[in-house]
Length: 225
Image (tube, helix red, strand yellow):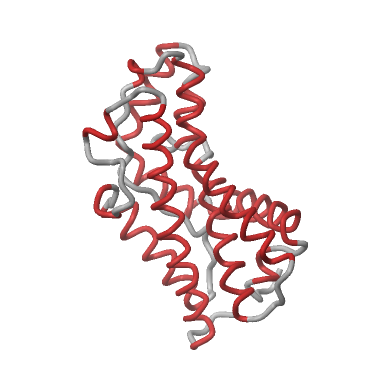
């Protein structure tokens, strides 16, 4: 712990590649589900694509994950490996059933990340704790971090959009208006409130990873529990 070496660098590389795939598929899934629910807005805005250029956000997709990965490369402080992209423009007025379709869109991103993590966990069921297992474990870990993080009620993330659906109209409007402060909320959650947020995300991550693969993600990444 607390050192930079080739082994840590390889783990950081696995995490970085996993994060790019997780974020790309998450943003595509959200745009795809909205399109399938009769909203043409994501397609018209060029968001129905797997190109990272469509969703790249300087802070959420660049600075934030870059800082997180630097910290992981030296294993001094291990924040959740998370990122976010520019949200696909969605117009709920096209939805045939507003609340149901909004919920489906809200769960689309975390849902695809959860599916990817479970598939990786099932692969690990028949794998050994080798370098391959380490890479697949990192992939499962990142996707679970992304799924859980984006369901937190942080304004601007999926969890906040879902929560707003059950709030009174005025409260929901105020809540949605906080989206513009997403970078600030994320910095507070990931770094200033790192203790409780890390406990929630890592606890759930290792529980799901353990159920799918038989061991925690930290075991597969060959890190102390």
